Amino acid sequence: QVQLVESGGGLVQPGGSLRLSCAASASIFSIYAMGWYRQAPGKERELVARITSGGSATYAESAKGRFTISRGNASNTAYLQMNSLKPEDTAVYYCNVLQYELGSSWGQGTQVTVSS
Image (cartoon, rainbow, N blue to C red):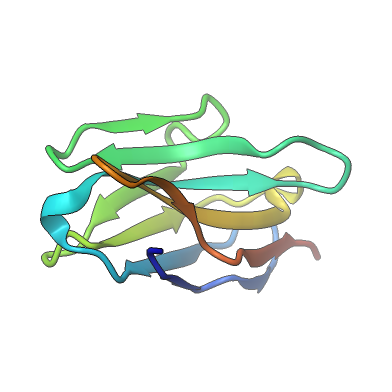
């Protein structure tokens, strides 16, 4: 089982920024993609952004232009830079790793609250 360690959540005012980090205890060669999902109260979990081992990134429409996903040099780490945060971005953010053979693994989640 892959272990995912997330960090970087917290409370921020509207218009502010946060950077989420995720480190996976998996070989970089086993990872196809890493991504961030979020789940707000009463809503389903949704994709925020995902990046493949080749560097191809996908964003939710709500994240385009404000959020940037990147991989660390070790490539078993992923970052989500979130700018111009809005109250509707408030949610628990989950890191996800998709491996070629072992499938999908999830982090424990980190709370992001955007409020004045």
